[in-house]
Length: 570
Image (cartoon, rainbow, N blue to C red; front, side):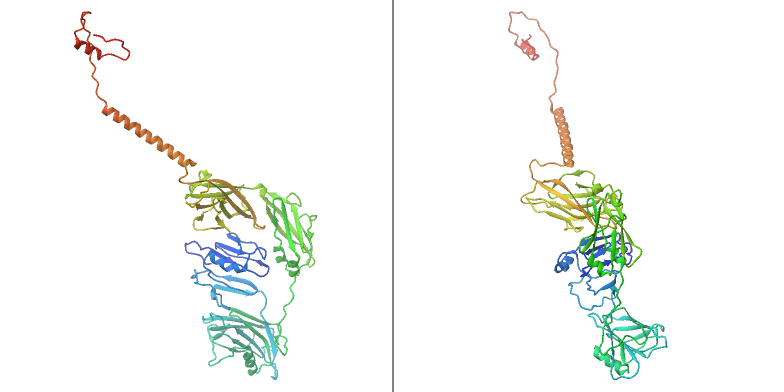
């Protein structure tokens, strides 16, 4: 993908479905790529930034599964590819339907090179004298053959006695033009325009030339041109480059009928053999397996398979060689949470052994922490969440290890028996619109958020939040660990429901504020509505003891009594 001008590159899902075991070398510079493949048939060291997800078990489910991830931009079925170049320069318009067509021309978008040579045939043309030979290339029409294309044809003949008496016949769709790169002079018959590489910019065309579009018709055309034999006859789909090579000036060995050439047998591919050795890691053991059928298909004879300590040799278990050891033996070197060793493979065809560094993750020395938070700042952990509330989840690994690349593989919230399990993350992707993957925190902390459904019948009271973390090193297989925590589920209308800390603090402050305001209001009312009191001096008047006729003075004296007085004072 070409560089984007200030915009973030869009995410790409690449699905590889294979019918045989391959070694994959993947390059995706600057592309946020998810690679879906079957780890049993693909051996790959994925570059940084590329995440792997498994394919569905059934091939019938492959296309519906891919469509569930998004609109399918392109589909290609290739026969034994050696190299594939997929260009994502421009965002394609999502097709309304996905209906692959045979031999479709994908143009600049997809280029690929076959791993094996094409079907090359040759035959003698009976009844024609002389030594003239013909090379015939027929490009098959595709479902999109109307778009103009230039096909480069490279012809290399091993002639030491000058130019051969030869003719090159090129037949293809009308939209195809040809660029011919030949190391010898020869007569050329081609449909459409053609040019010679040594004369750039000069286009040639034979007017009114119509070549047959059938194999038999092309053989008759070679006979008409006085060719006594067809040195090579090739039928290929629309391609960018076609290369023809003949080991001698006379071309291929001829026979009365076209025959297929047989490629030379390959020697042991030691590099591919070493990619088959991928360590499987358990809590305290490293294991490597080498299947004999794969070893034999690579034409490799293995005489010994050991760790760095030569006394630790592989066991022969019939259909495979198995090499295993505990982390405490066979020269294992433990650095932090990473276990290191080396695999040594001796081949009968080579005097020097092949070596490969292998690693495992010591999961016993690692711990995972799972926390639920109610704010995106991830400050205060909580063990309760309310229905209809958004939760923020953080998963961390300690101690942080730079060599280990952790990824959130899956997460779920189990609400049984009252409700079903809620899938939050599957195959390292958010499950549904209520779940969002967040940017990683410090030291590779994994984070995401989810919105819990606000209405459930019956209402769950507790739940179990669990997350599976996939961890891998650059030279080891995937290791998965699961961490869980118990949650209290709070209903908005639940009496006596447990309150989380922010709610408790808010209610306490609110109650204090309301009490202070009520106290101030009551004091204000009391101080402004109290009747004024008038204090007067007490006057004592002497009267005869036998006289009780001064009622007025008695009344005044009685109004000045206190709760503690026992008689009225006159």
